[in-house]
Length: 415
Ligand code: SF4
Image (cartoon, rainbow, N blue to C red; front, side, top):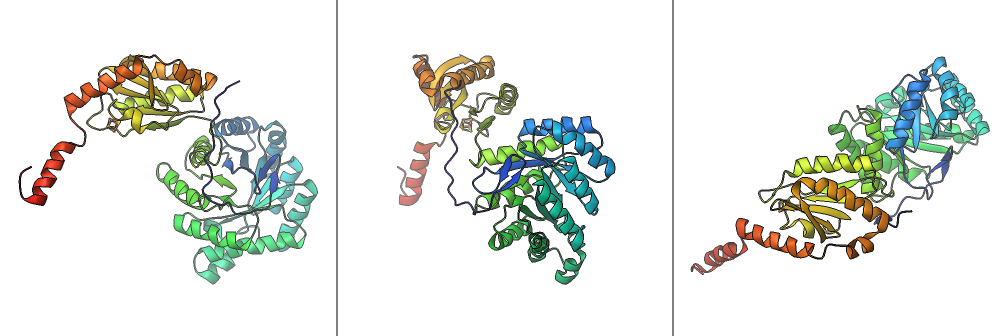
């Protein structure tokens, strides 16, 4: 059992109160941690391929997976997928309300209905009644690109008010038949409009909100848009479950969603958090290459730890003292440090292997034990290397020279 426990950063904001809704055994809203969703890209009728992707998504951090239910074969596929899935499955429904009924029969844990394309009130109510009987929640999934035509005409464009009105209309149909296990999304492909839509919606309802920037596109642009929109809202306390809609392998979506929540301190760290200096003229090693090697080694080892790769011993350990563990290069050596304290000095070509070895011990034994086991000469060796580098390269800020120049300009006299 590991004695090393990563901590969650204290939330510096108040989370919007939302009512809890269950998706299978995953609670969304209320006090539940923000969950990560993704969606398969396989043909649902291909049960093995879809299940294999569901498992990959689970491995990458997805708590809930959505699967399209676009025809009868897909609905039949769901009947085989659901009982073998490691996570709750949501069926994505467009146009044909009968496919929602079929998906419920297949045992899904949730439905996503698009109000823009299932428009008959009696159909929506029939689905809500069947979902209530099955104990299944529904996401009202409004999308700017497929907004109800009447609303598009009324507002002239998929503006935030139109998206929220569409959601409200659908919610009223569901509430009319006593259905309240509702989540809502109002996704837009333009980040400011997406943010504004959710802010508006959050003022009007207490249902949990599913956040996403729709059709964000391929990385890196898609990642940046998703992070910008989703983070803005999460840091305002808005949002209960998230999805990155990337034009990429969905595993990338799940991984990015999970990482975002971990970086914001909203989920416990389960994987690597690599920090690395950007490198500069002082670097004594190829920082990009070492960072890539370390990322590969640590991801393979799957350690929940923050690791720093720093290009020089002059500033490295000090600047990265918040990291659990790190390494700073200098004079052909790697100076391995824990919480900023140098504990071992290793040859430069063994840096990554030594870092991984020490990290495994750190996770196993804890910080105090590893600091107690430090090589007593390591800190002195690091200080020697630091002074040697400073002598060679000079003071990074050239402080003495600058002070003289500033004084000369200020007084008109050479110092
Ligand atoms: Fe430059 Fe050293 Fe800072 Fe990296 S740690 S950016 S190499 S001064």
